[in-house]
Length: 460
Image (cartoon, rainbow, N blue to C red; front, side, top):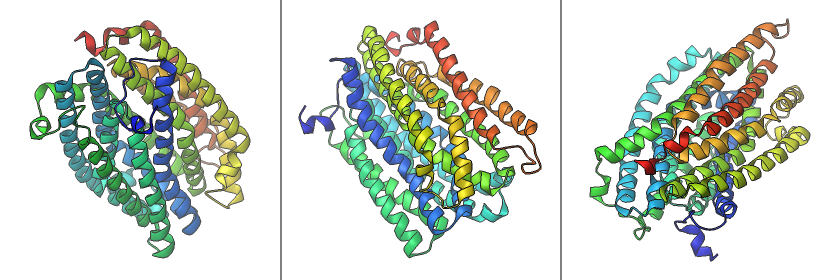
C-alpha cells in the first residue's frame, strides 16, 4: 500500500477482515494513546511541579467534564455509524448530507456545553464534597476546559467522520502534532510561568483547537468522496434525526458512566486526599490500558457499519471472530504488564512512597479486568456498527448503576476501620472489576440473542 493511500477513505468491505481491522485499529490505537496523553501529561506536570493536591484536583475534574460531554459523544457515535454505512452503500448524497449535519450539530452541542458547564461547575463540586484544599483549582480547571469545549468537540466529531470513511491515519497525524504541542505548552505554562492547574487546562484547549482545525482542512480536501457546501450544512429532519436517534443511546451510555463515576468520586473524596490522588494515578494508567480495547471496539464498529451498508453480513461475523481473538490476546499482554510493571509507571506521577504503594495494590485488583473489557468493547462495537446502540446502553446501565455503585458503597461500609472510617480504598476497585466482568457476560448474552442483526440500518 502506498503512503498516500493511508491518508484516504478506505473501503473495508473487501480483503481479509483481520487486515482491514488492523489497518484501522493500529493508527486508532496510537491516536487514542496520544489523546490520553493530554490528561496524563496534565497530571504528571502538576504532580511534579505543584504537588499531590494539584494532582488530586486535576483527576477530580474529569468525571464532571465527561458528564457534560455526553451529548457530544452521542452525536459523534451516531455520525460514525451513519457515515460508515452510507460510505459502504456508495450513497454519495446521503453521505454528504450526514457529514454536513454532523458539523452543524457539533456547533450546537459546543455552545450548549460551554454555557451549561460554566454555570454548574461550582455547585457540582460542592455536591461532590470536594475538599476546600483543592476546590479553587478544580473550579478554575473546569471553567477553562468548558470555555474551550468547541475545540475538543469538533476534533472528536470531525475525526469520527474521517474514521467513518475508513481514514484513521489523518486523524492520528493531527492528534500527534497537537499532543506534542500540548506537552510543550504544559511545561511552559506551569514550570516557566507558574500558572499551576489553570495552565495545564489552557494548554490542552489550545492544542485541541489546533487538531480540530487540521481535521476540518483535511475534510475540505476530500471532495472526491462527498460534497460539503451550505446546502449540506443545513439541518434536515431525516439526516439529523437519524444521527441523533443512533447517538442518544451512546450519549446516555457516556452520561451513565460519568454519573456513576461522580457518585463513586464522592465516596473517593470522603476517603481523603491520599486516596483521591491514588485514584487519579490509577485512572491515568487505566486510560492507556483501555486504549487497545477502545481501538478494537471502534475499528469493529466502522468495519461492521461499512459491511452492513454493503449487505455483507457474513464479513461482519468473520471480522468479529478474527478481531476478537486479536483484542483478547492484546488485553492479556496488558494485564501481564500491569501486574509486574505498574510501580514504574506510577513513579512518573509521584515520589511519595505511601501513595505509590497504595496505587500498586489497587492496580493488582483491576489488572485481570481488562480482558473482560476487551470482550465488551468488541461485541459492543459490532452491535453499534450494525445500528443497535440501545443494547450497549442497557448493558452499561446495569453494570454501572445496578452493580458497581451498590457494590462500591456496600464494600466501603463493610470495610470501615479506624484508619479508613469511610471504608477501605479496595472497595472502589473491586466494585469496578465486578462491573467489568458483568458487562462482558451481559454483552455476550445480548450478542448471542442476535437482536442487533434485525436492527441493521440497511433493512430500513
